[in-house]
Length: 366
Image (cartoon, rainbow, N blue to C red; front, side, top):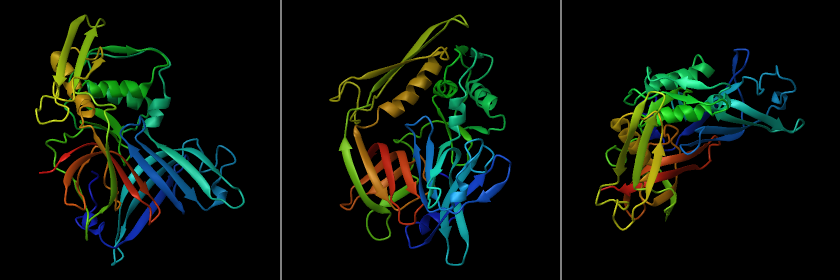
């Protein structure tokens, strides 16, 4: 969860308050200006290569670009979107929802509105496919390789690591290969994922463990609670209860290694060998040169894949601090309590817009 600006912020979200939304335009010429806006949405989704996307509607038709040097064009302009609260004493606190590259601008030139769509900064790395074979050597660590690949595209990019870094095997990606997929492969080698956060910084981090991590927010039904509604269901799609990770590196002349990790909790609905059955997933990368590295990668993949076969879409009062991967407590109208891990969320810029959370896993909250 993004750190709230003060101790007042989170408690105020479940009481009557004035919503503040801001869109700042970072122009290609270095100037920054605030844009009037009508409404818009920001979506953050762990399942997408580019985690954050936005669509905003602006009233000023003069912003529709007519040439590449116009201030709101697809040639270097970025948007920073924020949402927050204006308190009764006039104090305003906001948190960022993301930094976005402007992808498209269009609208009725006479009446508007002007619709702008944007993507998180991962898209710049994704677009910059390798133009020649590119090697990450075993002389660097996984995070070192991630940093070098990102900063080769964006020299000023900030890369922050919260995972346990380690050495890797050498790997050469072919020309035309996806640079962002290479970044993710390096992150998986240390049991982590890489994404762009709400500040536009690149984060290397492990997915929090639903079984051991405390919830960061409570969505409760009843007076003073954030709960609005929910739908629940179950599906076997994308659910695995074992991962076999392996590596063989001919560049470094390293013998094959492998590790198998299973859901070994007898109380888990996806217990390996239990009623769910056995459903392994297989992963291989030359970056994995030790059993420990294979184990880390397998554990990372299993955290995603061995989720209970339940899913929920939860509508609540908006909390702009929440992020994919966060764990929340949900208390339903009948008093049932569950812990959910967020897969995706969509937040509106309009004051009366819904706030929808989709969870990737849940468990009973005792």
